[in-house]
Length: 256
Length: 367
Image: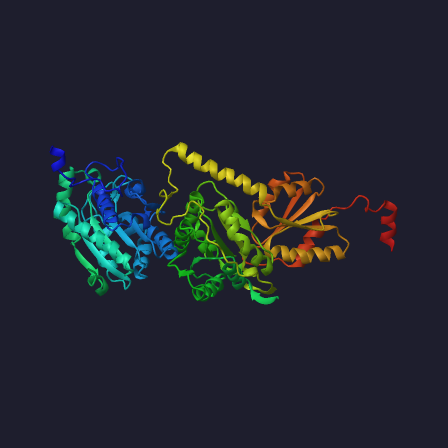
């Protein structure tokens, strides 16, 4: 029989709930959710993990990632995660935040959580736009990029420059693992998964603050097809936000 | 044994003895001694969390996280910082997790000054943040009472899964008084059934304040209102002094009540039938007790260190059955007993049975 000769090579991780997400077609949040879920399963931490969702498109992360969860106020996820982690230092605590949440309204909270070396994991999804509210300019919107609140393109003279968060956070003493990855093609998706796994392992070993910035697409608000949006990451976003390792502490380097 | 303690530090020690697991705060006068005291005290006990946050915004959201994690948690601040906390308090109220906040009130609005006021009354009792909710608000009038209320505050917060605010004015926070501290309470960490600990051996739990469907949000709000009714039915606390035969009743809380008490003694010494009604719970407000009092008493004088905030609740409670006057001191000025006494004289009704006959008045005029 055919079935007896075939094994399962790909299935939904049990850490991902069996529901249809609310994300738009072509959005890469779904890919990143799956990566986090796979890592939770592979590290066998599903029942030790407490997630902190943020405000933005990923506000419903708790509907898809199957673990204990709370939902923070806009930008405050790192502060809320600090409260959870300090009370339960033996549990795994992570935040899942977009660029509006983390780099604009929550800038103080993320910088100080990193500076304290708060032993949490941060999944930072950077798609250069406020998605949930319909595509307004974000702190990471590229110069010249058109959004609903920068309709002739971001003019850096009046609207300022995009913030490079990984570079900024890498300067803090408490940060142990700060890397930027992308999910614009399968190879980069695999590298992103490795980084997410490492970021959780850093926490499991008590090595301090770990953040993975992930360049992500928002086809609907960018006004592009899903495919063109991935090309936009590859050709435009990566130029301003270079992929790479921005800080890896010696203790993290020693992790095997 | 009684010891001399500064208000802020006594409150901090009472919180420790009540089982405080995790404190998050930010420096601001006139509250800072509370933070400083706990910065040394909590780490020395081991397995208790002290963290100085980067802002009051962060502090209240750390409290939010710790509360979701099932800890006995609190923060403390003073008026401008308390304003910053309203966002987090709204989320905490909606999420129905317990916590305690100490607000050592100072002069406002704006940066105001460092002097004691009671002008955060509206912000504390009416919700403060967005949406429909009321924290429980406790207003001690002495350092001892602050200690006693703090000692019971966590259990009260846990009973209703709500916010308990200690309304302290700068006087109570800064003054030293002899107090008897309660014993150190060893808490058996119980499973509340809602806290986040990782879903090992149980269904996972989600704590959120987001309910996109109006029917679901209505359901959550109905639960908050049902809880609120229970709070209003069960938790009203107040003190009445010499109200039985009073023609005029002073209404005041916190240190304004202490000063009113002095004025009351002077008034009684002068033969005036004056009483004092002191709410201990500013929310739930003791409106029914005041309504009962207004069946008999026609004159109320509200003494507040604000432009008049509690006076609105007093007026609502007595529903025009009595005259409600206000002595409000602003800017951090504290009412003096003489000022209160002058106002008592101004509003003191003339007793019919005590009113002089024309003959007596004539006689009195010649004597």
